[in-house]
Picture 1: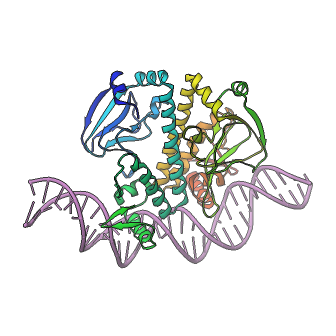
Picture 2: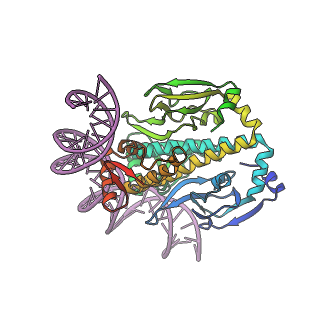
Picture 3: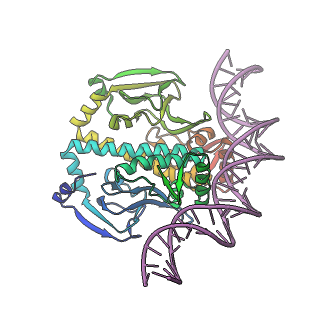
Length: 197
Length: 197
DNA sequence: CTTTTTTTATGAGTTAAGTCATAAGCTTAT
DNA sequence: ATAAGCTTATGACTTAACTCATAAAAAAAG
């Protein structure tokens, strides 16, 4: 999101995390702007039974945990390293200063926020609709678009059935069965378990 | 959200709409910043079977349909006057200019966006959890907080069971039954159909 | 103060997703 | 190359929300 050189110039520091490591917890307070440099992060809520709901998978270049930077409330979801990863962190006041001094960057930031809201609107509408097929295909469509920004040569989906389940509140079995069914109807091209597009 | 005098100074105009009137449609393009002055607006998606999913009810002072102002994509949801209402509209370029000239206002706008995202995170987590009681109580809790900003003397919930159903993707009957059950467990105070808090 | 409309209420039956158990197919590591 | 672990696959059973139907209660309109 923000240029790494700019972040470094403002005193940001790199931090290495290993797969499974908690970066911050839901409900805790925030002092940093976080941006992913390398690896993968999942931004999650955990329910009473310990089941994870994945709000988003974060890819390199994206920021995460940004709500408290604006409204001073605790984190709405926790962040966990989904793989070994490198993040870059900047202190909150410096982040505010950057936005203040660069209106174009602030606008880009607002644009990113609205795009995240857009995705939430989309997925929420689908979940409320209680139709696994349409939830899954909306998610796949989004990831197809999203993946283009990260890996231009990717032609197959980088999500497992379990990850799809974790982002839609469905069970793995339901996702597997629904996707099988979509394949039979010719709505998905699956080869050796992987979705191609 | 934005001061009405400021909006008028920048050439905004009032528009009256009657209950049920479409203000803008999901998927259409956007040329205005919209802010509600009086009445109530619902921001909705309609599924294949014609069932409405209410993303949010908009109260006076709030803006709506703001995503396309930043990313130039079509509206993610449509807006319908839930009652007779007065809205104020400002042309897109003027809106951009206001933000550019007033960094503090832009910051307040970003804060509003993150708060909306926060609510989406919250409700999405609940919907994915498939637990009507917790979906409903999360929604009620949110509205309790939210209502304080609009009507300080309100002591009862301004939402019908149908409206709760429309925001959670549940059926009216399920909402009624679940709320009855919550009352029996002493988790809700209901008197003559209305929820008090 | 009626009449009409909306909202809340409740029962009975259906259905689709969840649950649990088990196994086969791919990857990755030693 | 073999074992271990993750991912996909499939069947049988259960359950909780949906559906439909009907009615009482409350609010709004005339």
